[in-house]
Length: 88
Image (cartoon, rainbow, N blue to C red; front, side):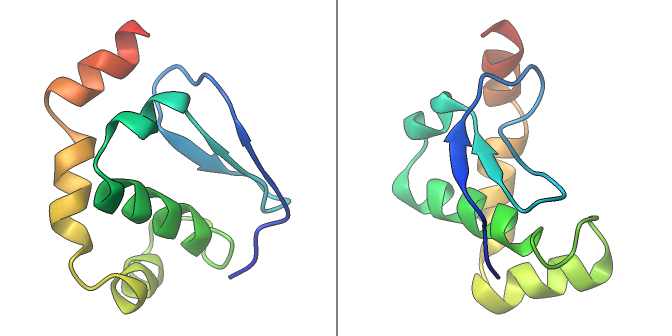
């Protein structure tokens, strides 16, 4: 998994993104999450350098690098945090 760069971007409706050139962008508010959730977001986006879609192969790759990913995914992916992002 190799990224060709990273930057901060104010998204409307997402926390991070990996483009076709494997440049990863992060919303600045991910810094408000715990270090473990930040690690999950980074692993998630790095996995997109190999698998672009959220296919079974993608999630297997995430699990290979972070076996306990689902708890972190639930922490940032739903509930109050989504509303915070949409208001930002």
